[in-house]
Image (tube, rainbow, N blue to C red; front, side):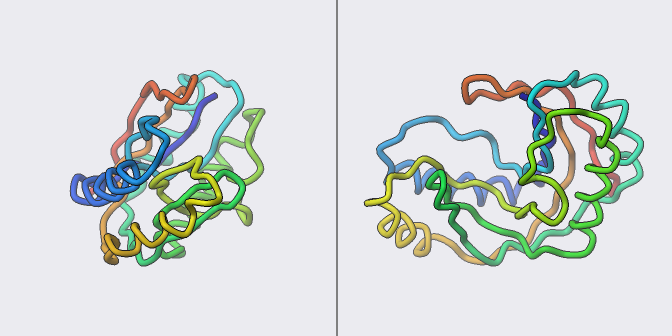
Length: 173
């Protein structure tokens, strides 16, 4: 599986990593989290080099995206806790452009398509229902709204929960 992700500046990554460490300390699941990121699209199986050829022109013309993380959220289906940035026009347009540039690739996951996508950075996942309340309480005590930037897009090949970075393209400053 390949994922196209937005990577954050150093300070933003540190803030999300802090939340991940707090969640990990309270979790029974010791599975390592992927580095802080925001997934833009996932493909069941495609060639990373071909994706790079399709997405590089767009990425190279895009400026770093300012982000305002103002809330915590939860996806019940997989016990996922996340922090969410404000859904700005610039973020939505960039996401739509990524999906448009990758439209000829097969195996796209529907919940990353425009009008289905929920921008978020995962803090922890696979939390069992009895622990949802305590986990939300713990994260709420640690969370303070913060601003940051998306500074690069990357393609990761993900196998057995581990990511291999296939390529990175930094957004312009």
